[in-house]
Image (tube, rainbow, N blue to C red):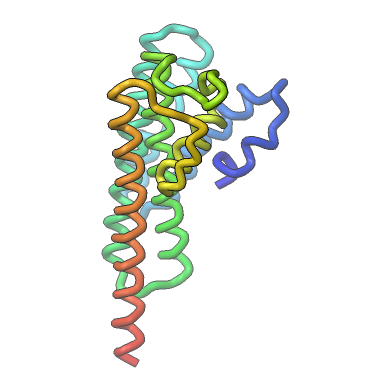
Amino acid sequence: FIFIFCLSLIPESVYPVVQRFMFSLIFLASVFALEGRRKRLMVFALIVFITEWVSFLVNMPVLHYISGVANILFFQFIVVKLIIQISKRKEVDAGVIIESINGYLMMGMLFTTLVLILLEYNPMAFNFANGSMPSTTRDVIYFTFITMTSTGFGDVLPQIPVAKSLSILMSTAGQIYIAVIISMLVGKYASRANEK
């Protein structure tokens, strides 16, 4: 939550280090969002954490791609596990609602990572309305969540076919997640209310 919504408040002078630190904390915090098998997940989170920092400290393109792939696998795993965890719950309570919000935010982080990797591969993949390219992770987070919600202000435009396909995937996945999770939560809440 802090990474996504408060990152824009960080001054430019310390932004890269703070952004990397906050992003890395997501890996470790995610472990506690899931139930069971935390030891294996903690090992996975530590591996992703380490690859993230090594790729940041040692500026080698290969390490950036390895880190990106590790991030994608990690976020994908977390999102799927959160959806399974939510679907297994019998009752809707504050914990389930927080889990569903976390799942949506983690899906956004997955797509943010995919966009960042695409931009590393092809810096011209996306274009801002003023002709510039996304310059910071803030820009990519903004684009990702605006696209996931299907708001699409039009100030960031996908320029190449892969970017356009990824934008469609983000928009569709965002809407499907909301539709599936909300219907699941409403169904569980309604069945609980009928039992009383």
